[in-house]
Length: 496
Image 1 (cartoon, rainbow, N blue to C red):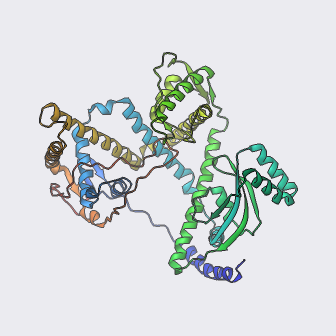
Image 2 (image 1 turned 135 degrees about the vertical axis):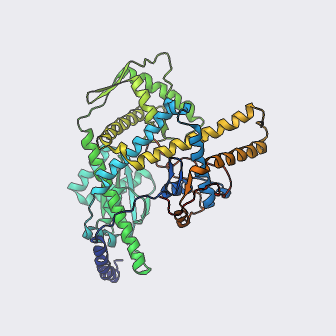
Image 3 (image 1 turned 90 degrees about the vertical axis):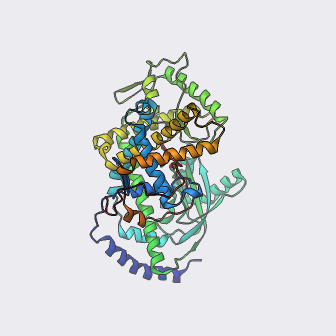
């Protein structure tokens, strides 16, 4: 089954490729140009990156997918946000301000991750080359996921002391399950970092035992190679370069995650989280009752954004937890959830596992509190890109609220009625055009930059699991189905 000729071909072709990559990687790095401005409405800016994200990471109807229609709506959103004014009641609303703070602090933690992990990774070209060659392999595996820590220890001890017992161990596991679990793995598959490291750091023969190795989830996996094949890359140097970059990216991501996990472990070392037993019991029971009620309607979420703190037995001044000389009352915990919704490690919550998962979600929130504190120490709250993103979210929510206010006022004045959607649509279009005309003197568009942009028309909705604010960008503002940008009187192709 081993393909000597294929191995030789890989060796000669990729020695050449390695030389090309080495030359590229050693070239002086070019400084990225400063972000240009695509459009400006008063003191609000729309960048090309924001434009692409709002257009391509959200769902839009077909009649809103044109490039000019897209920009028209993003400009209209800024107009409505400015029209709402700096004294809008929403800006004084505590949950709204907490949400914006939470979004900002999540972005700050992302930037901290980049600085302490991503930016410091240095790849060894020889390691990349070795993994590049190994990435041609596709493995067929017999595998067993093991959650029992005692069983993991027994298997590991047996394999270390008597390797010949491997076949017997697999036979016993197979007998317990009743069906041999098989899995085919390609390098491109989004498997756990530990699996990738085990399979593609070296070439493995049939019969090789891997593990038990610990996965990110905390479970362990035991694998045996039952077959393999080489799937060489066809398409010439361009295809090989794409694969090389793919391997480099995956290795960089894995090493970044390893550094980040180590950074978090160092940060939280000696920081023991202790709950007040009585308060934790009361709050967790209230949270469970709320979750079970909510889960009857929605079982897709792994988050908890609110808990009923108004129950008579809940004392907001009672102690809730302490960590590292810091004490939180129940009231502090309530305020913390407004900023950082609880993120459960599983969406499969029930009466049996809720208390433990609730505890883990709070511990993750506390960990993020300390990470955020480190981000503030590095002044990441001053980042222009982070503050621009927060402003984008604020403007999107303000604009949506302002649209509702304008239509509600028209209903109260008897100009339109609730049961006349066509009338409401026509009224709204007229009002939006008036606002565009009123703001036209303060609107500028960089048409040179706009002409460079090519948008896809494929619907895509981006969600990041495992974070308090998983939605990447606000919903696309469906404000006006028009591509007319002529109201922007001060057009300038050189505007930045």
